Image (cartoon, rainbow over all chains, first blue to last red; front, side, top):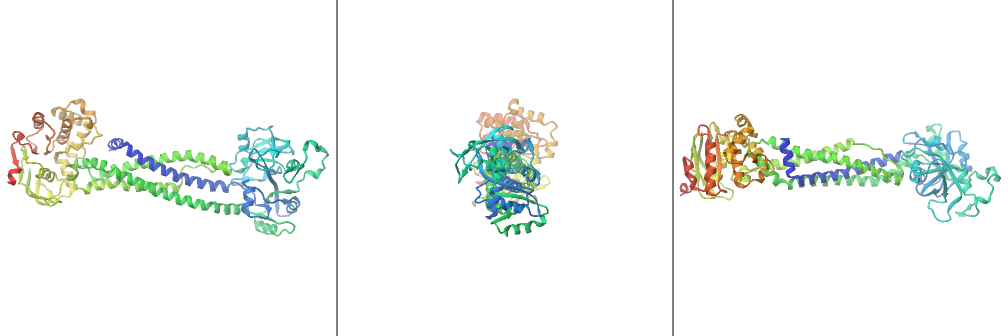
Length: 415
Length: 219
């Protein structure tokens, strides 16, 4: 029977491959939408870990997470170092890492922080940051690069870089009077950390010594660094601070206290909550995608049934001849069922292979846009259900020609 | 062997045909002649069990058509009847030998009568005047006359008890018709088989022992 089936399908090569291709195309669409959406959510939630709270100027928590975690947008306000030091003195705090944002290098954001950043900040369920090369910065003229930065700009340990004031490069905005030496490159994390450049807060402060209101007033070359007083390089303000608590149980109490801090309007954001708030906004798009994928399933099913019925006349003659020669209904049903299975499975396997390729590129795109890398997977339970649903519908619709052959009088079709 | 009594058939468009009584024994060759559209093909379809009886009855050995489902009739036809269709009904993408083999593919009893399928197919093909080389080429590459022979070989394979032939010579010129019928009659086993052929061509009557003229019957 199989050889008969294959010969029959080969004789209808064009319509059969059209059905297969259209089915495959819609499955690819369906799968990629689902994968991208799942991957985005996953990568999104894994972009920061190990941080119990982020404190920053009082604003929306989503805004704070966007620029501290995703390095998107620009901070509207800063908090004073005095406030940060006050918070640091609290008994419920285990560690605190301040960060200052604002500068960039060739499109990559600069994060000015302290060396303990690399010790405390984690990603994807508590994985620590690891240096693929070199070590953390120890001097104010040293810098650490995220893996993408090093890769895209071909920097190595020992490379020298200059920082641009603000996030866009323009003439006169470069801190060209001071360069930083790369001392370490981080391993790839699949988070926005890969696209960041880290330097010491003091080095960052030094860069801005000669600046006022975004304009350079005097050049660093003109001053003697060693003559600077000790506290001249301690920044007056920072953008935000990442905080680890001794016990998570004190988290809500802590954030309440922070909100009520009398000397400055600051707030504490719990990353998990802020991330899921942020995702619920993105999730609206997600709902749209889900609707879209159901529409795609419906369309591909209609297309498949249409194409099968369209090729009915061809099939009917062939099946009638089998029947005239004594083929049982079971035989004919098996023929058409096997055919739809062959088509369906080919489409599914093809779709999975194609989607693997699509997911790969989508991952690259997502990584570029958000700095998150969705993890890769072959096939999920939900997808298996959708596939079986499609296979079943295909099989049922393919039975139509077989049933018609048996409902019609043999006599009418044969003579 | 076969008895068909009181057959009548009313078409969907209202025309009604009353068929003559038909009785045929093993070894008998029956020609039913008559002009086109007089219901010859319908009669063959009824005898083949491809069309349900409306009135009258057909008995084929111990099988009574009126009490059989169309599935049983399909099986009965596959086991006992070799049908040469007017429209040939060959499957274009199969080779000559694969098309011929379809004749016994679905019948255990006819399969059991063929010891060596390839040998039997070449024997039939040769006796029907087809080249042996033609066996493996797609049937769609053959001429109509050659396709006709393939259809005949398919009907004859596995020695069915009854051979039904619907205008098998309609596409052939008179010389080829004679040659073709000679070949067909040579493969006919007069001890075990019977044959009913319908044709509008009365000139082939000498090949048969009984002739029923539909035109006269109606007149």
